[in-house]
Length: 115
Image 1: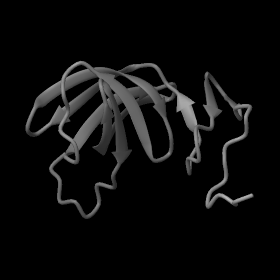
Image 2: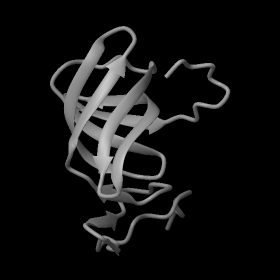
Image 3: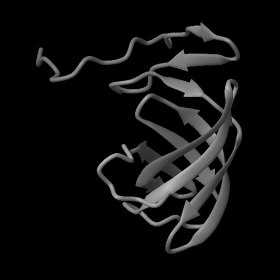
Image 4: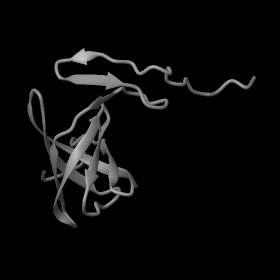
């Protein structure tokens, strides 16, 4: 039997109650995801303001459904609300599948951004 180079997620999802959010593992992710279904506003330098709805969030990024196309790899400003309050953070759209986007959070230090 061939050994896989990564650890597979358990068949049953890991659940951890954090207020109203529940963590779960998907595939061989480095960070657990938390279901988060809230409105999101995205500011793009090339496309203006985009609006959508989040699916889940992790320590390293967030997934969202958008009705308009977001530019891949552009640094974007995301605005959404967690149970603890509003959040504004920079991210890059790393992947797209139909209307679903995966955004990776980026560190604004060293970017020289005006956001």
